[in-house]
Length: 241
Length: 241
Image (tube, rainbow over all chains, first blue to last red; front, side, top):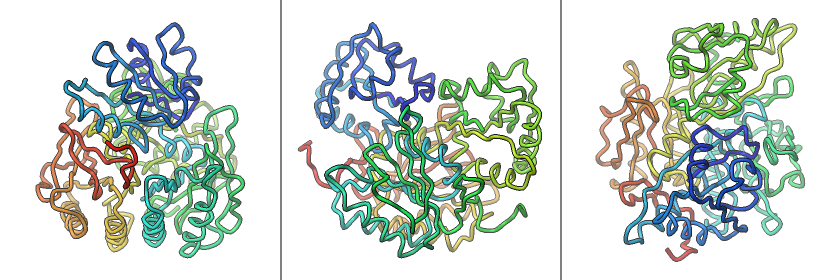
C-alpha cells in the first residue's frame, strides 16, 4: 500500500516511488493515478472509480498471490484510508500475501504546511462523514476536543450530499472558542487548483469548502503572523519571544 | 524548513531532497543530519546540539538574508516542531526572508505504518511534555479524548527526567477503555535500532518506552489482526466484512 501524498508528485517519498516502480501491477483510484503519469507509464495499471474501495482492495490482495502489487492511495494509506480495510480483508484469506504500508504526506501534513504552522501543539483529526459513524459520536468528539483546547483538523468536511455537518461542527466549536480564532481552509493542496483561505470562526463560510478541502481550526493561542496561521509551541512563554 | 521524515533517507520526499540540494547552507540538529550524509556531503553545514532550537532558528533566519538556507528537522517541521518558532522569530525581524515549509513523514505517519493501520478513524495527538504545557491541561486532554473514543497518539511519552507522566497518562486512558485495548509502541521508526511492540493497556510496560518512542493507544473498536493493530474505518459495518 503506497501513499502518494497530496497530489504534486514531488511530494512522494523515494520509498513510495520505488515501491511503484518495482510493482508488477498498479491498482488505484483513477484521480490519484492521473497525478503520477511518469511513474506508471508502460506498466500494468488497473484504475478504478470512486466508492469501489472494497473491490479494489480485494482485487489487489488476490493479484498479490501472483505478482508484486502496488495499491496506490492519495495522502497516507494509514490515515483515514484503505490500510485497515486491506488487513481486514486479508484476514479472511487462506494464504494472505505480505503487506507493507509505505506512508505518505497526509492531508494533515500538507494542509498545515500550506497554512503556516497550526499543528505545533496537541491536535485532533475528526472526520465529518457520518456514513460510517453516528453523528452523535462526531458531535461528542467535537465537543470534547473543542472543550480541551485542541487544534482541530476536520477531514471530509463537506460534499454535495453532506452539507449540514460542517455548519453544525463550526457552531459546536464556536461555543468554546473566541470568534476571532483563526481557521484555515486548504483545498487541493499542492495541486494546480490549490486554494488556501485563512479566515476566522466568525467569518467562516461553508461555501468555500468542498470535497477536496481540509479545515484546520486553531486553539486558544493560535494567531496569524504575517498571513500565516501559527500555534505557539508552549502555553508558557519559555523563550521570551 | 525541510522535514526529513522518521530517519531512513528513503522516507524523504523528492521536494525535501531538492530543497536540501538547492540550499547554500544546511542547518540542523546533528542527529538528523547524520541520517542524510549523501544529501549534505560537500555542502556548508551548521550542525547543532539538542535544546538549541531558538538559536538554530534565529541563525537560519539571519543567514537567509544572504543565501538559500535549508533548516532541517526530523519528521515534519509542521507537527510538534520548529515551523511555528521560525514564524514567530521572523515576525520580529526588519526584513524577514521568504519561508517555505516542506512537509515530511511525521512520527504519527511512520509509527502508524509500522504498527498496521491504527489511524483509520478519528485520532488525537497529545504530547506528554509538561515543560511548556501545564500538566493539568495535558490531563484534561487525555480525559477528553479517551472519553470520546479517539485513537490517541502520545508524543514525547518519556525521557530520563520525565518518567511519571506516561504511567499517569496510561492510567487515565485505562479509566475509559477495556484492559485488552491494543497499544503500540514504536521506537526509532525506520532506523537501524527500530523496535515495534504491540501490547495492551493492561500489559503496558513504561520501561519499553524511550526518548525516540511514540505510543499509539487504540479506540474501543481497535483490534489485532495477524499481529497488526487495526482500527476499523466505521462504527457500523457497512461492508459486511
